[in-house]
Length: 282
Image (cartoon, rainbow, N blue to C red; front, side, top):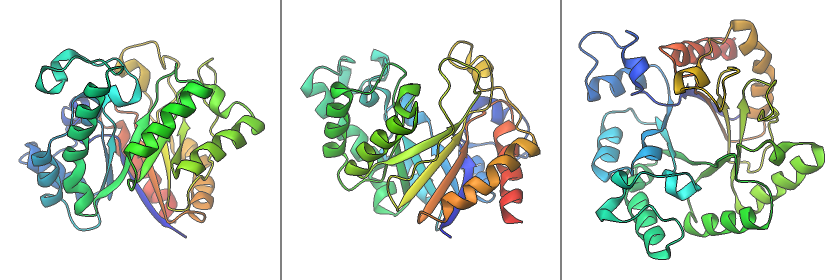
């Protein structure tokens, strides 16, 4: 069986910090990361989606975590076709993904920002989470080819948000082949299954190196409400137990499996991660 790493999508989320999960004396930046890394072996950096990561922070993350701890880093919003605020762009550049010079500068800054993690062997994956309007077709395939060129040598994981990518068995096979050609890991998701935007909980393996499963919660407000509404869900032990045999089977097919909880309301994500860890340890 491959290595199975369980964690959450952020250790700095305001709701988690305010929940009381971090003990007194461990609520500063260094204390939070050291405390988290003493309990989980992997974390997703979601701050890098909202602002470009910096080399100094990446070096500090390496210094503050034990050997073997890994970071999955979410790609900056401009690099996945999401709206990006001008205030977070480097050097006063416009948030124009259609300008080759802007794209080159942003890619260079993002690459430099995560290099300390990669050099230290702590980069688990770079997560490219594409928006709901990123649909299957020639334009998307061209975008993915360019992404593969820019990320050559990186461990890359791809999460689609449009359900058509995994709509049925035929489409799933096509998507699996596309990601495999580029050496990209397909991200599986758990979410509410009653919405028009729901993605099927398929677990395709597209590279033997890594598989990633992200648990978004099962809120009916997915895609419409506030952040708290979209991700508000406390996973029950029974809901998580349904996934346990699937995760074990998935881990048999890859070198490493990352299981990440994104139901980031209060301490719901860390509690779910702890419960899943217990289930899979049995």
